[in-house]
Image: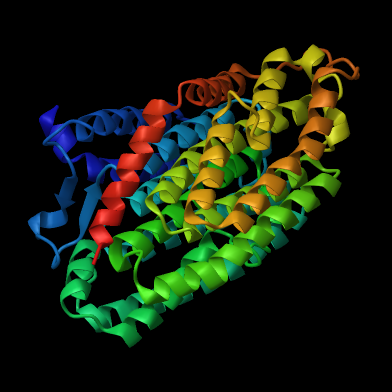
Length: 496
């Protein structure tokens, strides 16, 4: 067990990558890659338990035995174990969905690539969350992006617009990568190091204000593009709507969250919350754009007729909450962002998988097709309803806890305007969520086609996700405490 834990940071990436190679060569042999995803989730939960005990944190792995800053290191601590567990869990749900109701979406000429691309995406996202090296983060971001382009393009077999959506995603992703790598170059010029912890230490000893400002400007822009910050989100609604549902479940639930948490680590763990460039960018750029995303995404979701587009625009609005929360620059706000990311990850994954199961029964993607869903498919409808309630921020769900903590952090910071925007952004979903719940729970609809049933490979995982949203919403104290400890540790790393 000790040997496994010692190599756990590397195993998070190695297991999915090896399984991706197996899936590419033997796409019909699902046991290997399902076992890899399960192993990652079990390992993440085990490591999370271990580093939560005194004397066992953080867990640092130096590749090739080369100590930092010369070598590449992976670092697992209180902050990034949260996204590691989240990515592993969402990856498991997406992988199982490819065996269930999502299987027909990977039945085209390129459908055999789906498991390999999905595993590459999961491994790369885990690498983004784990790495302690600025350039290595760039490598994993690009592997994740290339895999995501392929996953979105798989939707082109059913709808040719999927190819255009993948191309748009590629353009935005390439721009983000270009900005980020230029920022890494400026960072190396100012410190002579690529290791995040070493960079933070060197900046404290020998500041280089102009190079630091240039570095952070490029890094912020690159990661904001990857995280689909408004108005750099142009690729997101179409990509989420036209990609196969197993791809959208992973991308909506984990991809943007990984990029945003990488931005949080660079912002607060490397530069520090008191850095003049950080304060300027967060307050004059991230805050107003986050507020605009909340309102714009919510309004677009209200008028969307297609269920996938409604959920996609809702994801834009929820990302606005995260950027506005990040711009507050306080420990309480960062902890709230972590809780909100978990709520969004579980909620969006549940919603997109449940919507795909409903679509399989009705052959329609409109919100109107959800009429009578509870009578036709009670388990999927229950998961869909809980996911919608969490998106709304209904009490007894984790979505409520996340939004409450963000509003509280904004008031404590003295940003009353931000708290008002968040409250308005929490009211807007009442319209489209209420309309959706009415159709799911109370309106009659056509019976399910004879012989067509929802697959347990899709329904069982999202029921677990929905249950997690309720359990953590009711008993949120342990999660809130863990998020608070994670935020405090990250803030301490970049303190000057």
